[in-house]
Image (tube, rainbow, N blue to C red; front, top):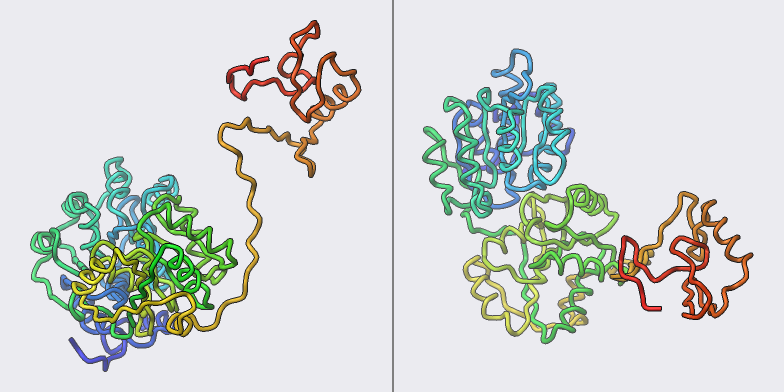
Length: 484
């Protein structure tokens, strides 16, 4: 690996891009950028291996934009025929790649669009039809649009596979192979991956030609500026108190859970305890994911509770603490989760919370990750915990939540006129019914009891459904009548 003695300009990065990088506060290249840029800017195929947070996004974004805006520029945009293609495993990573590339693309007037599933394809199709220079895509949705004829890859000059090992873990390699087969063999290709297992090596052999290999540390290495802690606790109750204490600091922290249900539940519990939190997992829509990530990045909330969907691709600056509330199943997940902190040369702390039944598995996981740490038995009030938390943030009163409708209960319809404070509709039709009801004498045998009246089986006739005489025991939508 080269020593970091170069500037972006000295590495051959065009001045317009250097100016954009400087304006974004990026003055010095990272090691993987120092190593790869001379080759990628000259059009060579590159295989880049580096730990998470090593600066891989700019390592391929800079040469793609520089070449498409320079030597490969020319001609009019053609609908559905991009010149650059970046494949990423997750929506979050695709979105963040686009965010990182956009200022660079603006320097040359290049148009970028992001393609992924979970949202309507209409805007993506419209962008493709209008003409796009660079597409950043997840494999599944891209292949769908290819089958529908909205995008063709025969004009692609540069292709990037980012986080190829994660795409392999998610089972995307067959789709990736079909997509790559549609790109010209003469184009430049760059592949970035932490490891070469699970079939990634086959991609390298098939699609990269005379490639140059650049590695930054070992594939399983952890960041030296990252401090690891293992906090052992006795019971679920003491664990919950420990979680609350660790989440109570003033800085940003990410808490990782095994399941979507528990991530949602914990975020709600912390918010109710005065610690504003949002969740991030696969059950959320793209709009919800974007909203929660934006709130976390903007500092509106300081705690993000996530499943492994956030372990890759989510880059938010200045995350000071990562907490493995549930230890992951394997060591690569541990490293990728932990890599959300101590990015770009900054320091960060990582805590793994361990119950007695998890000690053996956690010890084995850390050995595989090559992490050496001495477990500590702690409570929420232990000095080690207090030191790690630092200043405790002020209590934030949770916003009131809408009342939850009991399952099976008939829904109350709200008219356009709205509702009063006691829940009664104020629409004209409802007011007329109330006037008729309140002004009419009570039926013989009727008992006063709120909105529901129960009628006797004597001579008095029960009112029909929809009349002003009260709620008949029939559920909305044709349920069974209650016994009279």
